[in-house]
Length: 243
Image (tube, rainbow, N blue to C red; front, side):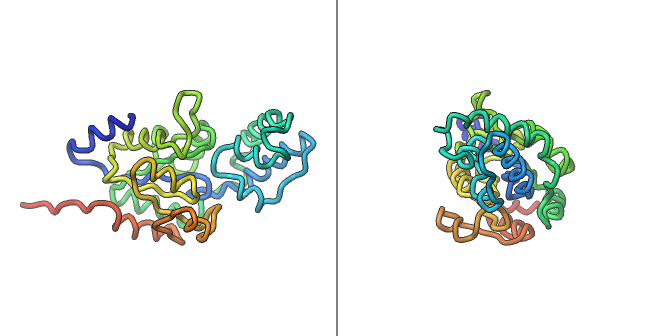
């Protein structure tokens, strides 16, 4: 579903309340697997490894950008493409070695199910890995179709473009008035803005509270359970049923 279809349907019928999550740094702590794969790829290409804190600052906009920042000289380095392909191979083998949900995330997802709030995922990591991770950790809360990763070859622009967010909104049967985005980075703040929906920024992920404020965060939470409080404020309340 594209932007014009979302707009056209926003006035039609009762809509579903929905939350769309970023994946890395929001639902899942993927940093160690990303850093390990990055350094394996760098060493294979003869480049020095990076610290985990360096990799923390590199992630959030796909593997291409991660390796652009990790490889000396970035895309101008003649071995950049080789390093990127090595990274893709390394991460395909290692994406689930140490990755795990952040504390409190399973409870948050259970609470959303109990409240009838649908959930989806939009990420800049490869689509196949997003779907595998969603199936592994969130199969009871997020359907495979509502977990979308990088698909630029199919004409779906990556975040911060709103394409994937609007597509997941269509899958969930939600509109802008009934959807909130949750993420941990400046890319997520821009993505929500471009999609025309509120953003809850989390500071347990890859970016600090001060960084998020500097990049325009309006709502920041410290723990997953705080997301529920902000959703009650940001999502429209259902009208009471009359006998």
